[in-house]
Length: 78
Image (cartoon, rainbow, N blue to C red):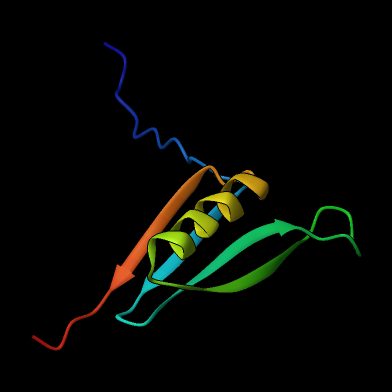
């Protein structure tokens, strides 16, 4: 009878971003291919407001950077 082995599938998102949600602003950081060195990555950070117009600008920024996955973090002092 064959033995079962642990198989791990690593999912790699080449275009991922993290967003820190605050009361007054959103801070987003996206990982992009480096223009200086082939095969390496750099981070691009942008600050957005919390109005509807600014959230739409954030969406456009995601689309412009071809973001595949977004991770959000928010803290509260409630």
